[in-house]
View 1 (cartoon, rainbow, N blue to C red):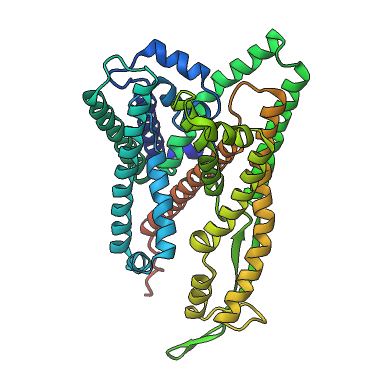
View 2: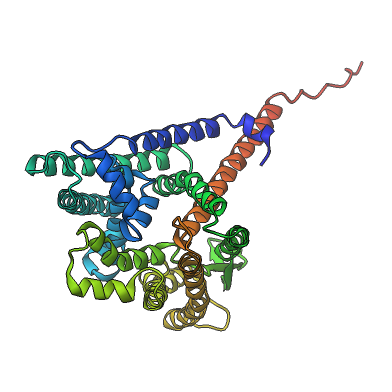
Length: 442
């Protein structure tokens, strides 16, 4: 990457400007409030809310939930629907057959995902409207407010889904991931200002501030290293004959990431464990003795919370990898169709068993890495009373999206340089001078 190459890549600049423009529209939408909300009461409520809805949802929605903007649900219903459809595709034979139909199957799966997004967004929007009424945060409660809130929030989520698709198709990077990335980054300056203000007031010692900054840098470096780590399985292809020609066999490798499941296990585990805190927050503390007992043992920072958080991350890492992101039976079948084999391993069932063995050993390290990155910030928040949400899930998302986006920018620059070289070679071929004829013989 160089500035001179970037200056010549006109299409890449247009894609980047298009992406920035749509992301600015998203950020403006987070400040447009839902009709009928009492702004003063909402600010007091969100200041008093801890954990649950006041922290993690606010991070994923870029602060829209704290302002109750039209994008208050964010893109999370679409992500949840996508994950659910992926898991159902792996477990339901009918959906798996649809997925294997090629482009038509992909369109059907996308259509089912949109239907699921509408259903989840409607359910969440109605629950949010009822909770706002129960918390006396509404100027004119009633069915009109509920209908207006549901229509506004569901429309906002569907608009964000459309924005993400446009960024993916006509911009740079993955649109849905960039929307979450921008929402997280937008909350960082305010969180840092609050953090340093606590240090100036004496609530947090300077040593803790320096330690947290060093730890954040170390965690980011560790995440970059682990996300780029691969286990390469050697693949051999035999010699083959096509017509009268004999082609020599080649060697390749099958890359297996240390963390094939990405950030999805952390999102699943965080969502399930924050559910009791979220219910208690919106019910105004009137959830009964059972919910109070659950919160006492499973509140953020509690030992049982951390234990179950780690256990669920490990479970979802194995479950999602073997059922969605890296299905060893499909990989072994594709290798057999391409006449590829692992040296010393017979194709078919033996290759599948070998891949199961390799992936299981890799996931022991990958799940431990995910659990460590997600648990360390939770422990620090509980021990040192850090006043903002610093979660391993947000670090994973920011690092992963940054790496993917930079890689796509490099790919576009490389493709542009290749196009320039091809055009130059064609022009040189056309301008090649004709050979001069020698003198005529007398």
